[in-house]
Length: 494
Image (cartoon, rainbow, N blue to C red; front, side, top):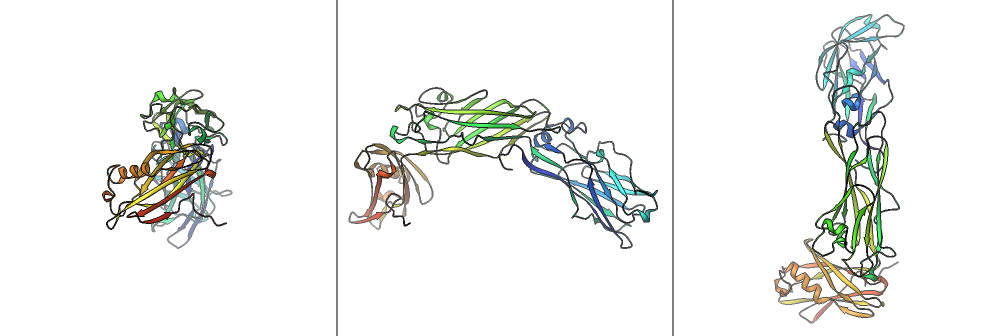
């Protein structure tokens, strides 16, 4: 179920019907089927919410199909045709005509089909009488609307099932002869009445400024995300009042993307949205909430768009003071996941495919150290060195994260400040943080690391990339030094 178009196709209500039936004498009963009306498009939400009381689709939740079957060669009295439906049910309460009369233009001959039985998923027609049956090839049988109205769809199947209609003949008491599967007609389509997206040029995108310690965006103190919500409709739209909406905006994996809204460093609360160095707001109506881990921002509104054709736009704004207050802005990307809740006689929630909500980059440096061993080699301790050379005139905080050979994440936080035009040794802070994560204590001896411990480390420095180089080495027993190539020291061949 996917895309961000104003109308999202969820399933098709398809009818695969035709005649290819063999009689007792071996005669093939071929035939065709033809739709009599324009293809109807129905709201997926309406199917899941409307009460089943009448033929009107969203007063009653029924899909009506009218088609004509043109018979092939002769049928005999007591031959039967079974009509079956999958993905829905027949309206057994519908008032069906007692007979369907098949007539041939220019001929007085007729075939009368009577209902032998009617169930929720199949109905059987029997040839009860006919005149001139041997000449009935080409006779047309009109199946009326009431015969093939389908009941209300379940909320759990909307968008994931289709309705197909099939017919099978039993001629002269023979085994079933299915209609020609190559003859198909579409009798209806189910579409998502509601959709959501983001204005292409207006998303949570910006460059985090390392010159103010990553506490604002370059050239701006605010960023915005413009979300559009659309209700597309025709005569088959779901009836009822306005539709409630929830939109979750998720930060990148492993990152509390909205942590800069947290004013005290103790997790995010509703108060953090409206006060302090960082704020979040929506332009009109609805409300914003934030998760305690600062990873999800949620917009909710009970009357965003109506069930008539309508479009609405909501702008979520983030602000961050340029002063050196509050927490840093993380670099990473956002995912936006909307959902609509429609309620008529029942309630159904329809999730819309998630889409990209923007990303924050960094005008600083991100350096990956792909491999570093920890622990002991034989009886000799392994020690590690991380030093950062900053040749620019800008000093900047350096943060780090690590993962070990099992993928276990270790967030080290700040590991020092890269002084301007200097070389800064970051070894102690990084090694103590890694020992705390993987050896049980920041002061643990090398022997406390599990055998074979190895990590990769990602360093983020609030200094210009062109002026930042990290030197990484390890030695065994204090005498055998090994240089480790990282992304700042590797040589790229063009």
